[in-house]
Image (cartoon, rainbow, N blue to C red; front, side):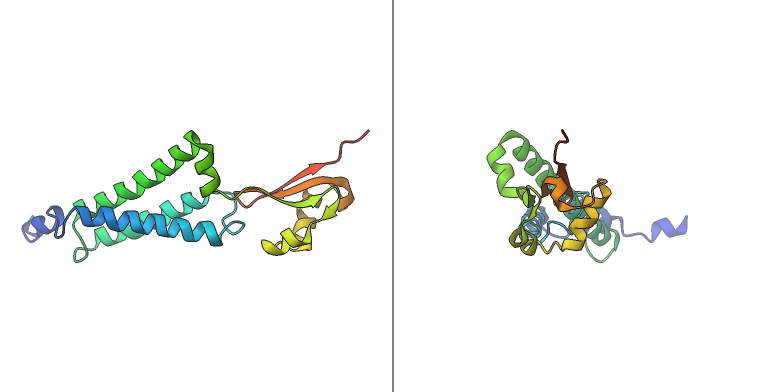
Length: 167
């Protein structure tokens, strides 16, 4: 029980800085990283959304800083985590409520194949190789691009294939 007496309880629960500062820092970091991910990432994220990756990374960073005694109080850390969750929730809500806002945040699908023809300009833009695209086609049980009506690089980074209808 002597160990409990040595703990600086005040440093754990009493903020060392203004409580507005972590909200502002969390807001700037969230929106800044979201903008950067929106511009740079698309295919790299894969099955989960960019915003999901952002929240996980930021929460891990904030939680780590809050655990270390010299960094910040638990209250400041929890406030920063709450700020990140707030922005994540608000952006998801805005995308659901306002389709125009969703177009700002999420990339539209990008056509990679049109009526069996590879759209190489779009493929180059997103660094999709012919080999990658052919692998996706084969996973759908098709042998050649000519069997594909359309293929799209989706907002989440996956590639969807629409087959020609068989007569």
